[in-house]
Length: 178
Image 1: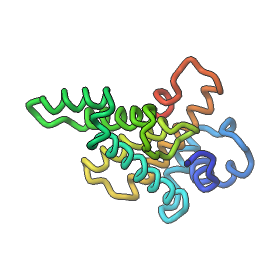
Image 2 (image 1 turned 90 degrees about the vertical axis):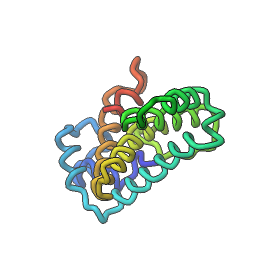
Image 3 (image 1 turned 90 degrees about the horizontal axis):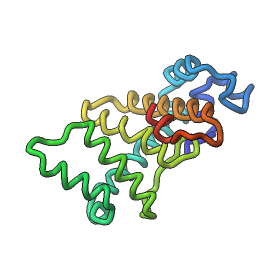
C-alpha cells in the first residue's frame, strides 16, 4: 500500500509539512504539486510509485486476460463489444476496459493483487492504470511515469482527505478520477 508511507508522504507534502502535520488539512494543492514534481527520481517514493504502477497494471492485464476475462460479466461484455468494432480500440476505451476489469476482478473475489491509494484498492487502480496505459501508448520515459503516478496518488489522497469519512460521493470516482 502507498497509503501513509513516510517516503511518499514526504515526497508529496515536503519534509517540513510531512514532519509537522499528521494530516493533509494544512497542505495546499499547490504544495502537493510542487513537492511531487520536485521529488528525487532515485528516492524511495519513486521506487514505491514504480512498484505501484507495475502491480496495478499487472492486475489490469491479468483481469483482461484468459481465463479470468470469461468469468467477469462486465469485462466479458466490454471486450466482446470492442473486439467486434471495425477499427482497433482507442486508448480511452482500453483504459476503461482495463480499469473496469481490474475493479470487477477484485470485487468478484479473484486473487488479483493491487496497491491501494488513499485507503482504497479500487482508487489505486483508477489512479494508476490510466497513467500506465497512456504512458505505454506514447512511450513515455520511466521517470515521467513514476512522477505522474506519485502525483496521482498525492492528488487522490488530497481530495479524499477533503471528502471526509462518510460522503455521498464515490471517493474512487472523485479522488482517483481527478
